[in-house]
Image (cartoon, rainbow, N blue to C red; front, side, top):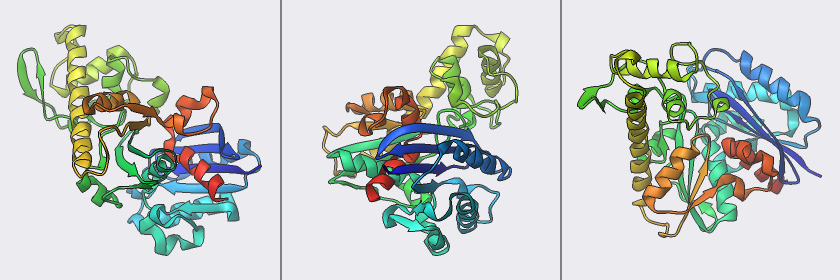
Amino acid sequence: MVRSLGWDVGGAHLKATLAEDGRIVRVWQRATPIWQDLRSLEESLDEILGVADDVDRHAVTMTGELSDLFANRADGVERLTNILSARLGRRMELYAGRAGFVPASAAPHRYADIASANWHATASLAAMTMDEALVMDMGSTTTDIVPVAGKSTRAAGYTDAERMVAGELVYQGFTRTSLMAVAERVPFAGTLGPVMSEHFATMADVERLLDCLEEDDDQYPAADGKAKTLEASRARLARMIGRDASEASLEAWAALAQCFAEAQLRKVHDAALQVLSRGGLSDEAPVVVAGIGRPQLRRVAARLDRGVVDFADLLDCPSDLRDAVTRVAPAAALAVLAAEAD
């Protein structure tokens, strides 16, 4: 039996998935604010390794190299690789996307392939199992949009800069995105007013008010550091338009939350239309949804008039792990890809 552990080292979360002969058996996700320091990452690595038992192969992808703790991406890839190598040892390989798996020693000259390649792992797994699809993964901070066909990814970009221009990387997430990055003006009480350029509230507040949020998916403090309740979320939302929550009804604040959700939906929808406009996918190609933002992505799929496939449908995993696996798609994909490569 081959036991493979897939790791996705993000700037905000560490995600890991254990597979036995390609079947997912365990999933972890921990908050790791790498932009502050590396202590939380090191502690989370040690915690997971302490219960994972013997692992034949570690497969690692990362986006944490973008954190401003590092001088640049090359520095980030190298320092994160050193931390991981010290704990995972010679059984660790880095996922370099278009270059496949590479040893840790390749990090200095392969950093451009290694950096932020987690989307490629998710899309590659989908390409193995589907004739064609539009793979969409919305996490806490960003949304990936990747077409797959002919057993391969059909992305127009590879680096973050290229992917943003191509519409394949959208800086809109389900929880951590500040509302000032979602809309500049919103309708309220019959007027169309500006949104304050302040980090007063996030999409977690919006989704909480719309009853679309699993609280376990909101792993970071609220924008004001206060409670994660409906009342507190309304107060933060009101502040975004220069008001107090007492100035309007509960229904009015719910309607405002819906306006922000709609504004974010349009950004992701527009990006998906841009990707699809290049051609290469038939009208029957479904949308594969992954990440904590699956509720938003299902709405995008409906607007595109396409069917929906849950990422967990592409894997062998117990029914009680389906939601967890879909939330950590790149780590799950790596665990399976590593087993296949072995």
